[in-house]
Length: 551
Image 1 (cartoon, rainbow, N blue to C red):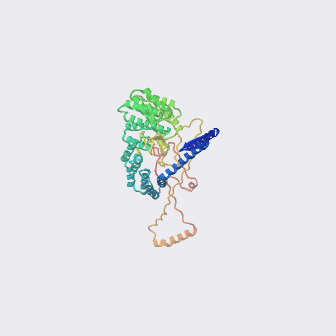
Image 2 (image 1 turned 60 degrees about the vertical axis):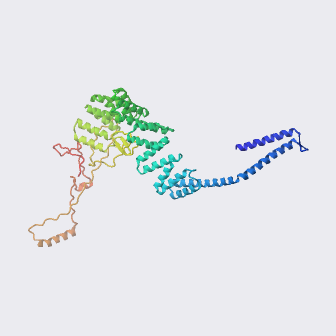
Image 3 (image 1 turned 120 degrees about the vertical axis):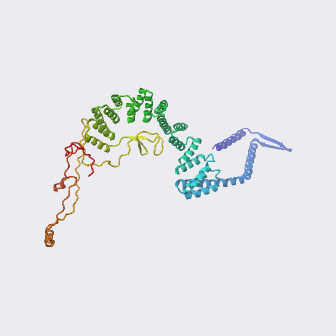
């Protein structure tokens, strides 16, 4: 583009110069070797321009002839290189598609057309073709050879790392990842692998230093680094909480600032503050997180902030925590447990009933069973609540890769992944754990809120009784009867019975104590529901009977 503009400018200047000479006529006189030459200025200018153009054209021709061998060689070299790159491109596409044979052929063709020293991607294509052919050793050799090339060093480390991971050599894979991190700290795969190794060894300071060397560019990357840093600081605080509360406090408070809604960091920071007798500051940290996300571990740490508190003091702290987050299951549960410990059964029962209305789950019914046993000692009602707890939805827990833990941990015990635990509800049970009578439906013990309609389940009819057909029993013959005399009479009686009516069917044997007469075929008899679940109404001695019977 600029060359064309340059030519246009030159032509414009020449035209301008010729126009200027045309407006100013004159003669040019040249005396040479006794001869005098006289021409006009216009003719002289045209002649000079023509001579310059002829010289330039002549120079171009001479230069073209002189450099023609090099130009021809360069043409064929460029054509060969283009064919080689075409083969390399086809081979890379074939390797990505999983066509090992085509990738191998294109690799050989590209190696013939292009020197591997000029194009390092030929080594990568060779390694990929070897992997597709199943020659793992050749692929590892190719990746090892890449380590000598500065441009291919990281690619070789990546290939060796993946091969070590495939073979289960975790230590070797971690070694290659650490070497890659030294050259390029921005590589996510190398940083993650090295970070997993340091966290598995409990080297929290080394993991924090490695994470601090990263320079994330995007918003998501920065948030990921911040979250993982908070997890590492929390893990460090948990490790040194007993030995060095001050260091635990510093690390946990930094983690709490990075992730204000991270429950383990807040709980650890509060416990470190409590150990330094800073009750008010630790309680403030727990209250802040409780307002965002109520959690049972926060409530447990808040109530037991002072080990010497009485049960009434713990109940008062539980009520204060409930006032910060009303109409919440965790708030009602923590007040119910504290009231049970304090012996205030009425408040404990009311709180538990409120929790059941807000979110019925396993811990609600277990707490109700504890209240029932402590207040009344009625084992039948206790078993009723325990049966409900077995069939209720499970409580949220710390879950990582399918593993359910009682306490939070910085890494997954299954995969070793950092920040893998989540507070959520575990997978539901596949089937009922305890099998009982299907018609066992005790009356609800939790009162519904005023003005609300009671949701009653439809009554289920009792299942049809199981009938076991008995084999017909042959009547005993009298001992005094003569068998020979009785045979004609028996044969005649049998023939007469077969001719008149069919043989009588055997009577069904009752099972489970249910009647099986003719009326029971149309309307099965339902056993009466006991007034108190788990108590046999016919037992006059008051002995209890488990509802989980096997017949």
